Length: 355
Image (tube, rainbow, N blue to C red; front, side, top):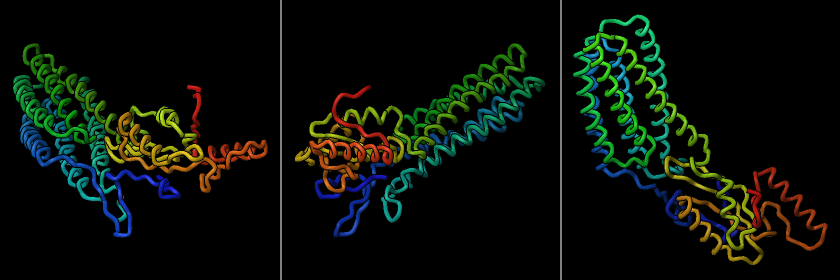
């Protein structure tokens, strides 16, 4: 996706990212990964959830409570997401080598997407079961539901606290944290349903609580699938408008045009950018490059930027012609610019912007 410069002063590859190729071979630089302390917190939350989930399934079938079984199913996805997060953290820590020039950074995105799809599938099944029980409700043991749900609230509070101590900048770690937090709300709803069944005999409260859990699972699943799909499709990170970024950069002193601009995410919270920069004839390419890097880093938190910097009219600058005062040269330049825009996307020029 990124282009390389034609001259030494046109090359920019942030020293902290990717592969550096030189006479001595190549070396891969990996991003910082979560510390071992983060893994210990995740393991603590995982053990709490798995132990309680096993007991909850037994009690759920004994009490004939779909709400408890729904909570257990949700806890299963929570446990799976934490386990996948642990695996993904190990994979992401591996240095870039061979054909994997970014390493295995997107392993966590695969984890997040798998977890989101599982949530959607489970929510569809549990939603169907809940509607069936609303129509023909079975007998539910309210006391078992209430006691188990209250224990679940305590367990989820402990698991949520453990996960809050971990580094939540990773999409799947944050997703797992949100799932555990959502499960906490679900257990509160189940406890309320158990109390209603116990004190009023309204057994449909169990199915209603299940639908609340289903709604929470749908919300979490859709969010994970959407966010991971944006990264896989190499969309611009949420909250970053490429047009605004281009307009901000083209206002830099000595910059004439910016085109062939791409902004995407390598993995969660690791945005990357590539662009072709044209500076005024005789302009200081090094100074422009440093200023653009500073703006990207400080204003947009983009630290991985590959910038091809050329002078306007310089040989190899995407066919753009030398600026000339003659009308024939101006017409030829305009035609070349239009061709470039058709081939590479919007061209951003210095000067007033319509928006």
